[in-house]
Amino acid sequence: MAITGCTGMALARGSASAFGCTCAYARMTAAEADFGQDQVYQDMALPTLQTSRLSLRPLSEHNRDDIIDLDSDPQVMKYVHSGHPLTQQEAIQDHQERLLACRQIPGLGYWAGYLDDIFIGWAALSPIQSNSGAFHAQKAELGYRISPRFWRQGYAKEMARELLRYGFEQLGLVEVVGQTMAVNEVSRATMKACGMEHVRTLYVEFEDPIPGSEDGEVEYAITREEWLELQSHLK
Image (cartoon, rainbow, N blue to C red; front, side, top):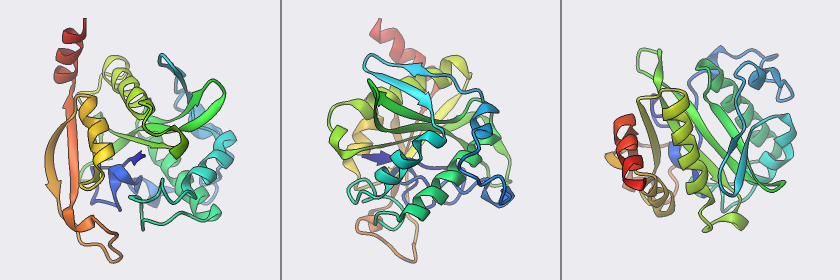
């Protein structure tokens, strides 16, 4: 199960079903792209979050092998990038860029999900960049990627709901969005289960389209007011 993205930009392959967050890549130096620099996350001081079953810990260099294993799985990458698993180097580079992109807005970033001490995948609230190049200080994009052995057990929904709570309650976000390929029914169902509503479908031509891309990319969203309304009904 994978949903990720960066809606403020032209769609990188499968945004919500693929994390193609290119927003800050152009500003990176070779030194900054060192996967081993924990300073990336120390700058943000991301908190550890807890759900009923999972611990969400700030992603770090110690998750390097976890990320390589995750991104080399054909099932995980079905709706991501070219639709094929990444090589070790591609996985490392792709993840370096995502981590660095999230330095733009304090409090946003990536969390590694753990069931006890077992890594199950990651979830993220990433920055959204406008057409002018500015970053939205009060909006973020939801993303997650989970190992197949933990699919269909509600973990993606559990992580996503906790990040929505964190984003709206602790960061004061006004809106969270998510994107995925229209054919990715599982990710669409997860967003809907979190209270997010389908707001639009986008059609993008890719040089290397993967099966299902002709049906477009769907965007889901939820505002802080809508989220608060949902919480009031749960009490």
